[in-house]
Image (tube, rainbow, N blue to C red; front, top):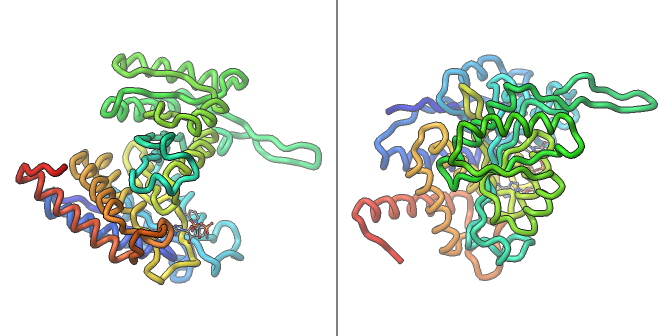
Length: 365
Ligand code: NAD
C-alpha cells in the first residue's frame, strides 16, 4: 500500500518537527510494509517570501491529491506587520476551509512520566485519556449577521442539522472503538442553538445504541475537566465551547510541545501539532517533536485505520519519557536534556524495539 502525503512544514520549528515526524513515519512504514510518497510544499511566511502569498493554489492542489496532510506551524516576527490576508496564519484558515475540515480532534492524554509537569495534582490526572471533538467550521465564528458599531456588537450562533449530524457521527464512530462513552457539551439551558444541537445529537445517537451519551452544560464541563478528568472519554462540542475546553484540557498534559491534533472532513485530513512556530527557539535543535510525532500516530489511526501502528508510536513516546529523555520545554532536574534529533532517534529505537518484541511474542514487565 502506498500513501501520498503532503508535507507543509511551514516556518520556524515547523520544519524541525515535521522532519522528525517524517523519520518516524519512514520507520513505521518499514515495519508495517507500507510506503509513503512525500510531496513537500511551502506554507506561511516562507511561501509569502517566495510567492507573495502564504498559500498558493498549486500547494493547495497537491493537498487535494493526497491521502493526508502533515503540517508543522506557520508565523514569525518577520511577517507580523503584513496585512491580515497575507499573514502566515491566513494560510491556515484558507487551508481548513478549502479542505472542508469540520471536525477538530484533540486528545488530552497523560503520559505517566510527565505527570508532575502539569499544574494539576498527579492523582487527579493519572490515567486521563480524553478525546475532544470540536466542530470547526460553524457556530458564532462564521454565523451571519455579525459586526459592531459605536453602540453594540453582535454575532450569530447558528448550526444546521447537517453540520451537527456529520460531527456527531464522527464522534460516535470513534467512541465505538474506545470506551463507548460520549459527553455532548452545550449550553442548552440558555441558548436555542444549543437546544437544537442537543436534539440532533440525540437523534444521531439512536444509530449508536451501544454508546452511552450524556449531556453537560459547558460551564459544568469546564469545572469537571479540572476536578475529575478521568470521567470523560469522548467530548463532543460546538466550535466556541471546544475552543475553550480544549485549552483547559491542554493543561492536563503540561506542555504545548506534547499536544497533537487531527482535523477531518469528509474527503481530506490534516494533522498538526497544536503549538506554533516558536521563533524564540527555531533553528537551535531545541524543539520538542513529540506533538508532531503523536499527530502522525493520529494519522495512522484515522486516515489509514492502522491502530496498532498508532499505539506503537504512543508506546514509543512513553518509553522514551520513562527513560528520562526530555527536550528543554519538559526538562526537570534528574532527567536527561536532549535535542530534537536525539529524542526523535530514541523514539524510533523504542518503536523498533517494541515492534520486534511484540513480533517475537516477548512480554516485558
Ligand atoms: P508558540 O506555540 O509558537 O510558542 C509558545 C511558547 O511555547 C514559546 O516559548 C515556544 O518556544 C514554546 N514552544 C512551542 N512549541 C514548542 C515545542 N514544540 N517545543 C518546545 N517549545 C515549544 O506560540 P506563540 O509564541 O504565541 O506564536 C509564535 C508564532 O506561531 C506566531 O507567529 C503565531 O501566530 C504562530 N502560531 C502558529 C500556529 C500554527 O501554525 N498552527 C499556532 C499558534 C501560533
